[in-house]
Image 1: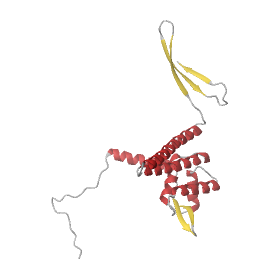
Image 2 (image 1 turned 90 degrees about the vertical axis):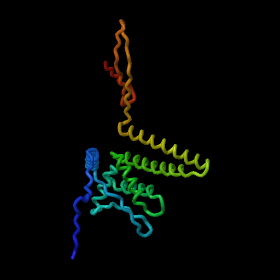
Image 3 (image 1 turned 135 degrees about the horizontal axis):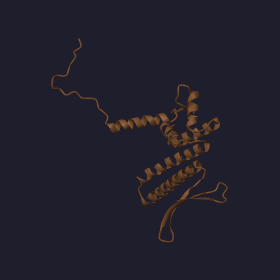
Image 4 (image 1 turned 180 degrees about the vertical axis):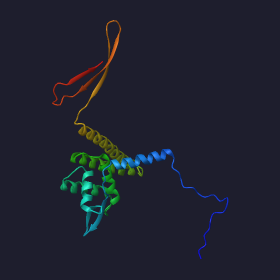
Length: 216
């Protein structure tokens, strides 16, 4: 016979946690962001005959490949196969296939949201530079002497600067290399009346005469 125990009178029963309004808003924003991103399955790695087999973790492998190709902004099978293999290679730190590191690399590329193959390549390079940067950051935190500190520090600084340059390169590529410069100026006319305006300067598409637009 099973004995059923019930709380006695006066016993405090733990209530389920109620999220705060701020936490509910954060959850709603999280799910909205997930809906806006195109689906992309995780990378699945396995070893067969001493070689690493790369596939997508999806019930329908062909659909999984298409979804992953979309996240890499390509419809070319050779490009997809090559870039995915490179992401896995850089994401694997040891001798054994590293699904966690490989999926982190893919997540970085997906987060950058490339629009074409060029952006996908740059995003993959940014992911690789980030991985190397964090490697030297870890080494910098565990140095034993000054030469090791200098070596790790120099590599870390170069990689961090390279990542910043890559971000600028991606921004220029996405905007077509256009730059807009706004110059504030003050004109004082006779009689002491000041007119404040702005001059917008945009490079001409062919590198020729530039257009100047003055706004009062």
